[in-house]
Image 1 (cartoon, rainbow, N blue to C red):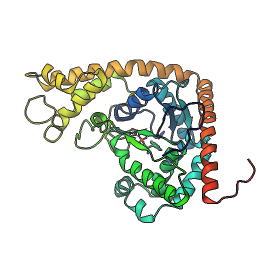
Image 2 (image 1 turned 180 degrees about the horizontal axis):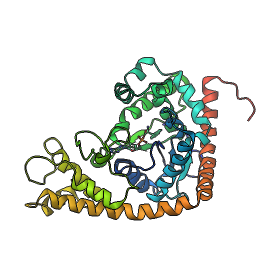
Image 3 (image 1 turned 30 degrees about the vertical axis):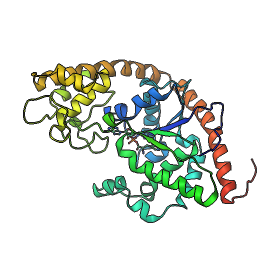
Image 4 (image 1 turned 120 degrees about the horizontal axis):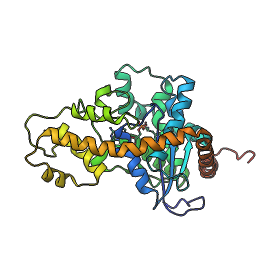
Amino acid sequence: MSTPATGPSARPRILSGMQPTSDSLHLGNYLGALVNWVGLQRDFDTYYFVADLHALTVPTDPEVLRRRTRITAAQFIAGGVDPEESAVFCQSHVHQHAELGWVLACQTAMGEMNRMTQYKDKTAKGQNANVGLFTYPVLMAADILMYDAAYVPVGEDQRQHLEITRDLAERMNARFGEVLRVPEPYIVKESAKIMDLQDPTSKMSKTSSTEKGILEMMEDPARLAKKLRSAVTDTGSEIRFDPETKPGVSNLLVIHSVLSGTKVADLEAEFAGRGYGDLKKAVAEVVVEAVTPFRERMTELLDDPAELDRILARGAERAGLIAQATTTRVRDAIGLLPGAR
Ligand code: TYM
């Protein structure tokens, strides 16, 4: 569609976010999303945000939320997001997200939200269901549609949310004229689902993985290596990529491959005839090599929270210009009076 790009850059836009629901990103967040965010910075106009409004769907102590919001933003930067290149901001600092979320909620059928698998999974596991959790994907659609995003780099677990986002954009365009850009998911097949080390048929997850199943970027390297040594592997002894019959070994191969830049087929050849212990040791080495500079950069960033807040303020200012243009366009299209600008 031909929605004009707003702002200084005519490069297609990329938008993505992460929730500040933990003191550390895990390796799934890093490999499934952050690595791709970094890779897209040069060729696209990139917007990366901390989804602090989404984090309110889970009851959180205000002090903890504040701390985790800064930590999450710092981790984007420690992982390679350059705040001079990309806008790094907090969702709640661009108030138009909530406004567009409301407009989109009024275009969303109850049945569509009822079908969202993340909501169903979370409530099935006993998570207290507030209305925010139920309408979570609508706010996520607003996040994306606000920026006329061409691509949204995420892991596989967000695919359904991107589908509803596309549906909502198409519905708005059908009802009110071409007002929103329909985005494409950007999901890199190999790394889109990093699995739990102890249960390699389930994704690594902040909320459902056990302590031994999850690798946190901020963890002590010796602990990471220990967890990798005790990762569940599969029966047999062959080191082969086959997620169906060898989910544990396949997960380790993927982790190694993305971090080392070595093709899975080359790793299979390298480890032919060797044991699982050798593979685990090699994976531990590449993981520790990746997290060490990350942890060092985090220490520097967290030592200077004022600079971090300045980065977030600059990012929100940049994002706010686009958000203002989009909401003005949407308000006009749907029949809200302009009001004072
Ligand atoms: P969140 O915070 O749960 O996860 C952040 C990113 O990490 C990816 N991810 C994984 N990738 C591979 N393997 C895994 N095991 C794994 N676990 C998590 C997620 O797919 C995600 O890309 N709803 C979003 C936050 C959000 C958002 C948005 C994202 C809010 N608005 C707009 C994109 C665009 C979420 O909860 O991500």
